[in-house]
Length: 363
Ligand SMILES: [Zn+2]
Image (cartoon, rainbow, N blue to C red; front, side, top):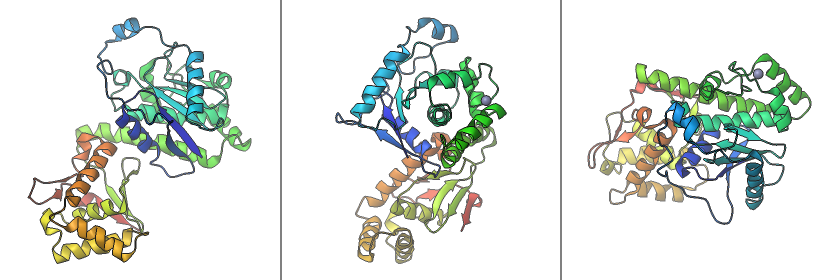
């Protein structure tokens, strides 16, 4: 089932990161960008995006937000423009505020509003976590409660660390993310929804594992600032997929050639210069690994890619390395990423810093 996310006016990179985060857990739900003919929107952080406000100012200074009805109409129009089927879940990610200052809301047409601004004020973590968290938990709510009226009846005004907490005090969203769980009342509603066929069990399980992975990532990151202990890197299966174990099993999504190169450097803690990739031993190792990982290419195509990658006159290896590094930074954030990057000055040996005791291979 496709879940459509529309980027109204948020930073393109943040929007992409949210999609990546939502798609890290396997299952039948796939989160995709909704776009229309005008093409994808491209916004950069504007001056008023992150202006600091203290608590009093925050309450006082902001003009009243847009009425829910107006926003929902706008969302319905966008959904149509993007040619998203009427019954499909559609999430409108925007910095536009709403009249009641809610983080998010949705209606029976599966149209959802998610507020994507001022998060730096309420939470300490990076913004993609609360936004992805809201998308996943709102989707679950809409399967279970179907319309806004039922949701309003079911929400808890008092914060108890349940997904259905209203979080009137906005800082309470932290507590919701740190539990990522339901109270027993809400659990009964979920069971009933599964029995009635409103909620597919596999959808429920996937959404809960997304929420759980966000929870684990938040906890791990806050511990990391003190402990400085990186997450284990698990290399598993025939495709040698790469996962960060203690980060909710977050997958580092690399294409087969990037994965080949990354695994090569993991396998060489001593470091290798790019102009040594063409050395026979290195070339053969890369060739063999790529042959294993690439399922669609024939030998001739594999040889061509590996030749190019290992050619000291081509820029291919260094382009791949910078793509791999930017994927790692986007998955982990700048600080934690340092452990896993392929680094080394131009012309010098490239290495991955990570202590190899943190690398585990599993079948
Ligand atoms: Zn509850």
